[in-house]
Length: 418
Image (tube, rainbow, N blue to C red):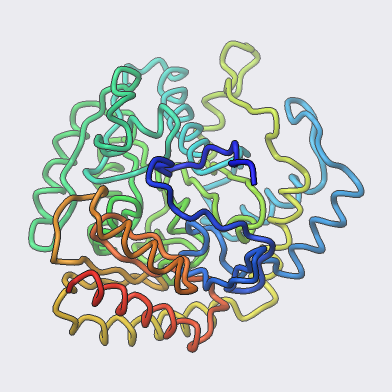
């Protein structure tokens, strides 16, 4: 067969790794064209919530595809976007009154940053600095990389990135240092603080308390610094509640959502904002408008999928499934914590993670390559973050499937540890 011309993301093609051809997905299982099967232990990069090919979402996509596929969204609108926007406003905190559509988590973050800077610019205030948290990750576009941790992800592109003010991660026992650093940064007339609530995903599934999240939001409020919650990964039930911010009683000024927005079926993202941020861009002067868009903003088919997702949350026992999966994760995590190669076990909702103690190396650790390859050879899609192993499966995952995932992880560790 002729070699594939596809250039895969985050893939070093020089290593010659097996790249399976997936023919279909059903529930928590992916089916290869060659007959192999894999349990999707990471929700296909954290997007799949209810399971692959959920019939209600697939039906909504089919129905919408026969009505309207795409239309310019600048100065035009359509029913799926209007209905979805109202549905999102209904399930998010009341002060979030405006919904801006985009295509991915990265673009949702870019929109949030531009909203924040545009807000201060139109108010004639000289506030341009963005505050970020150490080890954070917000995407791979230029603005999103700028507000994420600097390292192997973005080292080649350093000349393109803008300067930010970074505060330390609130590690257990060192929370006050984080709060003190945020207080100092906010006093310097910062424009906004962007953070992943409760769980830093690509930074190693690092977790911190709701109390710290609430205190950080309070500091921003005291100094008039806009609080941006990047819930691209943590939203849609991953941390145990619809939004991670709920657990801290925090209402952000700007909220980024994607991934589970369509149940993981098709790309779509939204950035929600408070009314005053929208009104800062409202004017009879066209120069004050919000200058951002993409060709596929608010794609009707994607909006229809998201509408179906909202209806699933309304009609089906999604929260019960989340609670059940979280309990199963807890039991498996407690068992694997006794393994001599395992350290720093942690859990937030349906997200379980632990660190491997045998080897250093960060994101480029050989552990990640070994365990991902072992999982691929033994029916499990898993992709460790360097020395950090995490399991974040769809909410439909059965106890038997979850046990199979952890069994493969244990066996992979045993072989590598010999």
